[in-house]
Picture 1 (cartoon, rainbow, N blue to C red):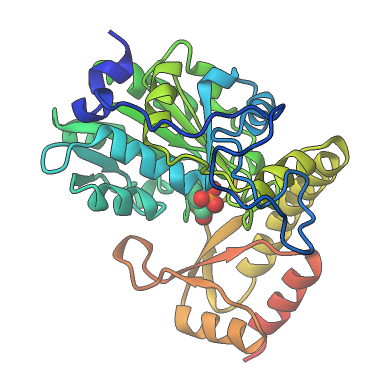
Picture 2: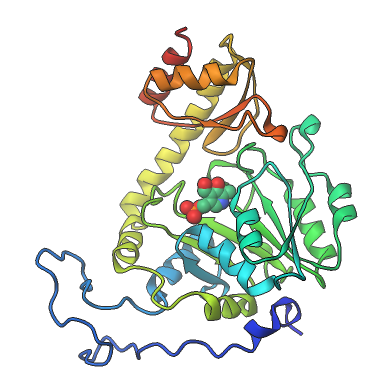
Length: 353
Ligand SMILES: Cc1ncc(COP(=O)(O)O)c(C=O)c1O
C-alpha cells in the first residue's frame, strides 16, 4: 500500500477531483465564461482575462528541474505556506490526528494544524545544545495519532540545520506511521544537502521549497511540495483549481532563466558573506550577548536588552523581529541580512545610544 493510501484522511482518498474547464490552448475559449477582451494595459503574455492553466505544468517542470526531481514528485503552490496547509488538510483528521513540531520554529505548522482541528505535540529544540533537535525526546513524544512531523532546516528563527542523517533515521523509523515534512525554505543559504534526493528511498519524506527567499520572489507567492508521486497526486485533489495566478507563473519562468539565476547565485553568495560580517560586528556591540550561528539569511541575536536594540534599529529606520517575549527565545531578536549598505547603516544605528 502506498504511503498516501496508508496515511491520508479517508475522505480525501475518496474525493472525486473538481472537474475544471477543459484546457486546450489550440482552441478558442467559449467554455469558461471568461471575458473575451483584455483590460486596457494588460501586459501579460497569456491574457489576464483568461483563467490560468488549471495546473501550471511549465512552472512545475521548471521547478522540478531546479530541485533535481521528477515533475510527478512536485506540486507548486502559493508559497510553501500553501504546501503546509495542503498537507494538514490531506493528512490530519480533525479531533483525531496530531502533528509534531519542534519549537522555536516557523509558525505556520502550528497554525495549519490548529485550523484543521488536529492536535499539536511540541518537542522543544535543546537550547543548551545550540537549538539541536532532541531525537530521544521526539521519539518519546510520538503517539500513534501523529501523522505529520514538521522539521525546519535551517530552522526559522534559530538558523541552525538539522543533521540530514538524523532526519533520514527518523523517516525510516516512522515509515509506517507518519510523513516527515522537511521545510528547506532557507536551504540555498546553507551547505547542507537537500533531502529531496532521498524521496525514492524514503517515500514518507516530504520536502518543502520556496522561491520567496533565495530567488527573490516572495511577492509572487511560489513554493513547492516535493514528495512521493502518490502524495503529490493526493495534494492535487485538495489544492484549489487555477491556484497559480498568470502573472506569478510568467514571473517564475522569467526569474528562473539563465541570467536571473546567475544573479541569484551571486546574491546568495553575497548574503552568506554579509551574514558572517554582520554576525561578527553584532557580537562586538555592548547590547548583544551572543549571535547564534546561522545557515540562513538571518541571524538570531541574544541581547542584554532586546527592547533597546529593537528601539535603536527603529530609530535608524529598520524593523527587526522581536522574539524576546517568548520563553524559548528569551531576549532574542531576529535580524534579516540586508544589502551591505543596509547592514552597515543598521550596525551604525545599533551602536548609537
Ligand atoms: C521556514 C519557513 N517556511 C516557509 C515559509 C513561507 O514561505 P513562502 O513564502 O514560500 O510561503 C517561511 C517564511 O518566512 C519560513 O520561514
